[in-house]
Length: 388
Image (tube, rainbow, N blue to C red; front, side, top):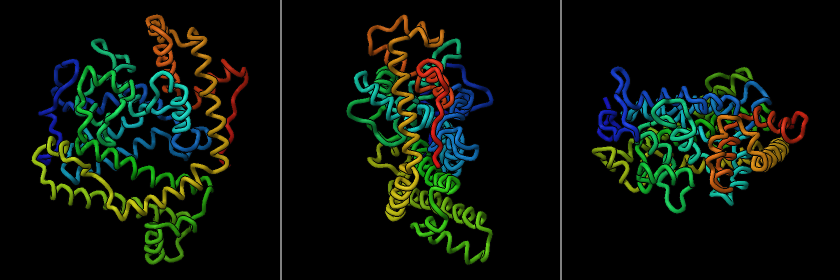
């Protein structure tokens, strides 16, 4: 049973291009399925989360991260009486706009695109699902429901001020009411992202030996998790001990979100999804105390993992790859694949060409970007330094 403040598929605002409804799937289920079958979703398999994907088979990629986010999001959504299919669709799609090499690639592309309207991975996700996926006879993009597009656009809160061009262009055709908060389902997908990466980045950092289990056990929240494991399983194997502690850390985050959400929902007493959008604040969030502890954990990860010497060296090398691919394609648009050349022929001016080039580079996987760089720029394979 859906809560009164959940998104009901029967009351969806529909799709930009009207379609006949499925007889056995809700509109949000169809959105989820289209996302899973999208080319951009498959490419997440070989896109960086923290470590460049070829550095090891055990590290998270954008695809495995998205699956973990969806698992967390469905759990929270179910407890709160929200629409699990919409929540899952948003969780699976939230990183579709990421470039190769994670945030490093995004930073490089954003600098290159600064004269042409900038680049933002959230806005790029909208561009992908509304334009760049071109498989259907009647429309470009995936023709997702208004609720899914709204959630992708503003899952981190209202979007105001100067809009990224990719978002502004679509919003002019299909008003996503960017000034309001998104549905509770979108807010759950956003916080599930935080839960997932705070948990799995600790896993990956340990595997990469960028910090020790003892250092982890000194951090807030984790101190109690390790103490509970040691009390219950004295003398436990080293690897099982840290896994059990991280399991408990994961649970603490999810339980905190659920408790805070229940409190906020009881206070606001929303009677519809519109009440959630007009609440003036997010209703799905961490408690202040846990958020403060998470900031200390983030500071630890930033210093010891995200800015570890080997990771910094990798960042410099892959930044160079993006920095050299972009001007190459600007000067040689004929090197783009043939399915892109019609867009190039119709492009009017340098800005239009730059946006096509950015779309192409943003869609690349790590390995394909390295391969294209080797083929077109250096003439030799590019070997990215490993983290260690």
